[in-house]
Image (cartoon, rainbow, N blue to C red; front, side, top):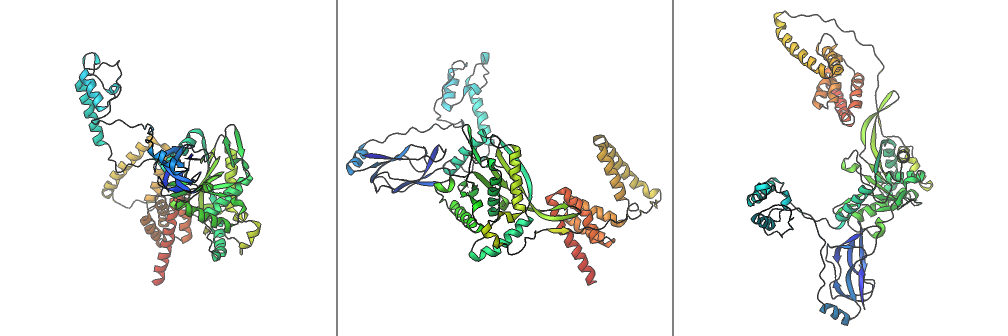
Amino acid sequence: MVKEVIVPRMGDVPEATILKWLKKEGDKVSKGEPVVEVDLFKATKRLEAPVSGFLAKILAKENDVVAIGSPVALIAESAEELEKIKGKPPVEKKPKPVPIAPKVEAAKPPIEIPKKIRISPRARKLAEKYGIDITKIKGTGPGGRIVEKDVLRYIEEMKKLEAIAPRVKEVRKLIGKRRTIAWRLSEEWRTAPHINIAGKVDLSKAHAFRKILNEQLEKKGVHVTFTDLFIKAAALAAAEVPEVNASLEGEEIKIYEDININIAVATPEGLVVPVIRNPHKKTFEQLAKEREDIVRRAREGKLTEKDVLGGTITLSNMGMYDVVFFSAVLNPPQAVLVAIGKAENVPVVEGDTVKIKPMAYINVIADHRIVDGAVAANYLKAIKDKLENPEKLLLENEKNLLRKPIVPIEKTLPVTKEVKAEKAVEYKPYLRAEELEEPRRIAEEYMKAIRQYYKFDKEAAQAFFRFSGAAVRSNVLPEKIKHLITIAVSVAIHCKECVAIHVRDALEAGATPEEIIDAVTPAILLSGGPGTTMLDIVFKSIEAFAKERKTK
């Protein structure tokens, strides 16, 4: 008897890719012995021989894409059946039609020419030779008839387009994992309306919490990462907001009891999403070990069917790639995906103080057919609560890991008391009329530009004129105030050299370090994350000035 080796069903994946044949035609096989490796949606599966005998016929080559449920090999139970199959002529498989963009080159197969278009016999023959669609050719003959020169002109135009087209360095086939990823994500994007609910989370306590955990667990060879914290937070939050731990199947929304978190892992072959089951019920020691093992096997291409099936929520952390914020396509058929970016040190106003804290964006992407915006927002709020109060991530039997209090890793900026503004010196012209001629000409050009801009934006022009008038005239503002303004402007435009120069000038003019910090804080808050890099320049410039004064 002859038995078929069948590609099994795995989830809703419609096809598989043949990765590697482990046996050759004619090899003896035992029942249950692996004969071929196939890729089934980011997992490698070995198909086994259904009976003992001989691998009589291989029906699909390596890298071939085959449908689920189709046979890929024949197993003959006896030598006689093997010889019978060998004697049969090979069955020709009809390849799937692949749409190819038409190119202008010789020896193209003839295409069907519509009869209603008026075209000369010579022009028709030429179009058939080059495989040209004559509906795209404009005829110049009598009554719009297409003649031979029209076809030749079209061929020359196509050659010119090919000459300016970008040169192709390499062509890669869409096969294996990449093909499966393309199919699944395209399907999800077409069917599921995505919504994005984003917010910022303060990771200052999470930083300190992770440090305390690693001080205890690294003695056992365990290293806790931020991804481990995010996995636990996502799972615990789903337990509080169960509507997100769901999927839509037909006319039914299934809400799952198990909370299984898929984690996105980049590999040379493409993205894979291995699953960690019920991480909220595991200790950090168990979770970190499992995450390390499954990520390693994912990058080595050794994931099994069990490693990728059964996930209910996907988490993607791209902080290690310096990505601050991103969105993503849902992992079907799941209802939500949690995307977390890089934590950045930014100034945060708390009451009357300004603190530098590590803040990160969290983006909850949800299938709007299943999850409403308010539900997604509550889920985001729950994740944020767990990360900002990381002691909530611990199970009862691991709370002894916290041998000391969690002290947030943050920096408080000094804030000075309000001081009275210094009295401005009255402006008195001190130049002779002939010496003012050149400045007058410059002022006229300046005022002309201001009037022109005034037509475009009245309020901005007025504000700029008032500021520039006060800042430029040395006798209107005290020297110290002028330098404090220029420091703030330098921070806002991210000019490191300017900051260093004007900090020194301000200190020489009598400004205190506290006054300088007061001046730059609004500029940092307005310019966002990039402005925080200027803060280090300010501190270093102040320190350098102080050291120089001590040496003198």
